Length: 164
Image 1: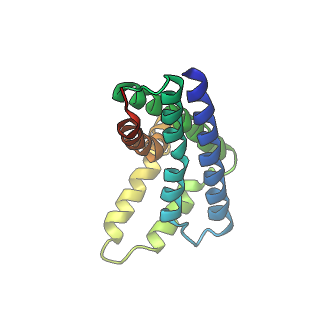
Image 2: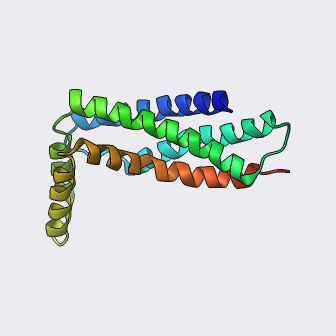
Image 3: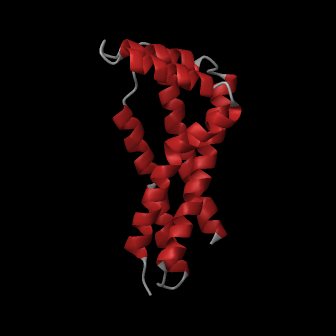
């Protein structure tokens, strides 16, 4: 089980990290253009195919039987490995290559905000800047980007592949 979790988690973590690096490079190269959130979310969803593959492989390892709980835990552990890699890579990028990320991101968001929403969005961006002053908050916010989707995919995969 551990080998299955690590293999799929590391592969998924590498893939999501490569996508994040590409989007970060895009943001640094074109600071006035907002990267596609659909592309970002879609690529994260695609990465979680490794969760589904890991759950399926776990059923094969168990000779065709898999409880919902075991399938969910397998998917959850794979999602955690993917998420940890994602967070570590983001911390490396943020602290070493893109320390002004929140400033650039805030400018980009506010530039693309309608006048009616500007006050609320400005307050939201100021809150994010405050959060980004704490490494713990950066870690938590980065986990929140990716882990909830992994949990949902783990539930779906466990339901699909459960078999007594």
